[in-house]
Length: 202
Image (cartoon, rainbow, N blue to C red; front, top):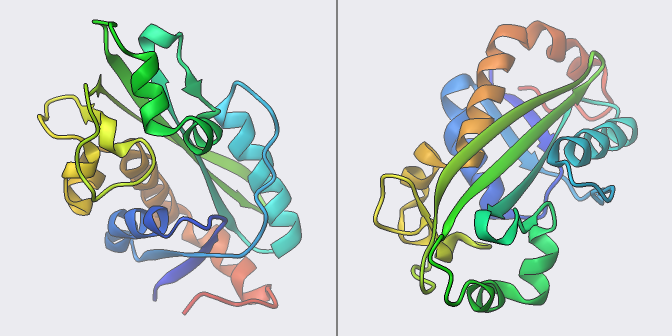
């Protein structure tokens, strides 16, 4: 039996990456067209947890929400929780402009996956360290992937294949933890899916 869980996102790339990791655990996430409520906070944990709680109240079944951010050391952690907004406004070129002349290019990507169910909200975190490249490279990723080189690699996330990226990425690590938790606690989730008017466990 594959346990299918709704994932509040419109980003098909996130869904694909999550499912690469979750497949071995007998779990699959699928996107749901539900507005993700984001509280203004410096904490990815608070943002993801609240969004998951609200989504659970609306769907009345276990649901997954993910929030992630790029934290650049020389910019005091900017853009951090505001990564999505910054990407939409100044974009990759804007961030590279801010980094001009800066020798310390260390950064990290952080992800928090929140699972809301009748027992509350469980948080699963993933972090990957790396550096900001001097220029954008690659076409396989999304967001800030073209300018982030993960530690131990010479290529940006956008130059790596999806599976290779998932093996080292912040998102991959967070969903890996989610998968392991579900395997050990599936009996807490399945009854909710069976009782839901939108059964997706099959």
